[in-house]
Length: 237
Length: 342
Image 1 (cartoon, one colour):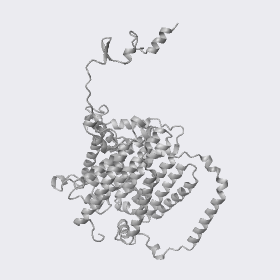
Image 2 (image 1 turned 135 degrees about the vertical axis):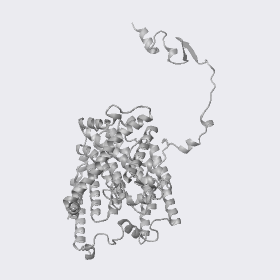
Image 3 (image 1 turned 60 degrees about the vertical axis):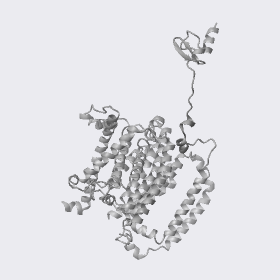
Image 4 (image 1 turned 30 degrees about the vertical axis):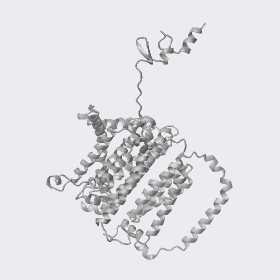
């Protein structure tokens, strides 16, 4: 009773959010509805007794993949009016693709039959095993090569992404921490002996550096020592 | 009475609500006093007094802050996405609360003692990034958006090394149940044999909760206050509560994974008299103290340094440690459930 109620709540929200993914006007809303759909699918897994898959779905899809989706969509500057421009032109093609897919689904599901044995015990085929252990024993024994092959496919995709984006730019300033640590005092510091009192002059009881603002300032005009301003003042009729 | 609570639907629902309240009410009070503790500890470290006006030793300061926050006006900026703007703090807060369902405070004493407890915690903490990302986007403000993006990148990066650290602990435990993880530390806490992982996990926990020295998403010197710059009143309060509840949650995760959860340090007489929940609280308080200590001590990281630490130092190191742990356990035959299932 309770399980059925929970199932229908999850299923309803799942279908609703799946519809909203394609019908929401704002792409960020679409992605958020997609996340909601993932989350409800995880809930359905939980109802079916597949707790490990449910958690993995949330961790992998919601926690990692959808974050990247959201990241990209938020950064895009999408012009909504231009999106709707091509609707009239591309509508027939879209209808064709949709129709073909629908027909295929119809053919597939009209012949679909659940094995009667599976309907009786949809939960936990091996009762003494937890979900995690059951999956682990199957994946790492019978399907270990397929599992490894999946890993390799992902590795190739990852390497491809890195190759596409990694480039050393001539203007890029990258911190090389090893190089910084390897520096010695002799390489970086130079002690300069300056003769005492050579580059200063006395002005108004203070020692000022030569070539500074104080040297060019008009004596007596403290605070407005800019020479150009002072000359202007003098030339005023 | 027991008949009503265990065998009728209404009784079960009432029992569930009571259990939830028994976790959440102490948690919220703990959050309130954590803010006070942070101010007091930081003040002591900086040779100040900290809040000392409201109530004895400033004990009522937390409530004064809460009331001030509630009575302020909620401002929703023009151009903000209203629904998402209000949804984000709500999400952050509720995620910080629901994670507590699986934390065991004693032997088998959790609201939900589920088989995949640690995965549940990982799943909930990986959802935490949405509250921040949505808040940053919905505020329609540059600072908030930059803060949100920084935070998302940071949390996703450090989750990877947190996951690997957890895997190496799980290898030694042989179960995903949090209660089993604690019980596996009866003889020795995991912080001793896996000391480097303990450190990596603690630092990643700092980054995951956006605490100093990794508080770049807030970065008040460059981003004003980061992702919650546009928030005020209760909406801000929910973020604040969520953040501190997450700190306590991460501390309890450190305690459960590495400091033996509710177990006493040694199974001898005077230590075993102290009840389990108290031990867990002591350990959480210790971790929180270190959180605050770190904040009072270290300057903020630069963003590229933060990413370098996560991806180029912690990730390879924890991966290597994980393989080493697996190899060691396999070679010595200490691997739990070796040679068949259970």
